[in-house]
Amino acid sequence: MEERKETYKKPTQVSELAPGIVQYLDGSKLNDRIGEAIRITTVDEDGWPHAALLSVGEVLAVDAKHVKFAIWPTSTTTKNIERTGRISLAMAHDGALWEIHLEAKRMPGEKADMKLAFFSADVKSVRVHKVDYADVLKNVTYKLHDPASVVKRWDQQIKELRACA
Image 1 (cartoon, rainbow, N blue to C red):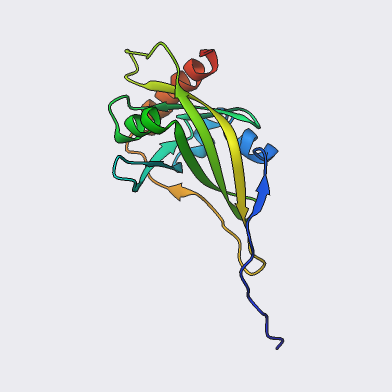
Image 2: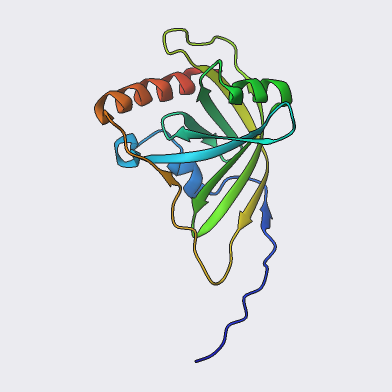
């Protein structure tokens, strides 16, 4: 048996989202993506990373350079984005971990009936972490208690995100 040398491989830098990520986050096929979450990270007031999860019904890739988010308005994540203007998204794609850095700003016109704050973000940098000896297979997963009502809410959120200027 041939011995393989496993060494550190520097992440690849790219300037935009892969077409497959844009398609995954285009707001379609929400029923097929129930139970899949995207990890986001902001920085809290003490300088520590703050992790949160967003569902596919709360993230919309407008194109390869622009993403919109729907987040609880009183959350720590919202406060952190408003303070720093930064958010990092991490997700599995094509056997790799994609680390996406975004500059975000809150969009005017909070949707009171939805109790959500909407953010628009520009992709600033993307690092693709991939090694020869393993593949990253999937994002964080979860189980919904009432899928029908959640997907109905997601559909409405995606419509609102698309409509936001």
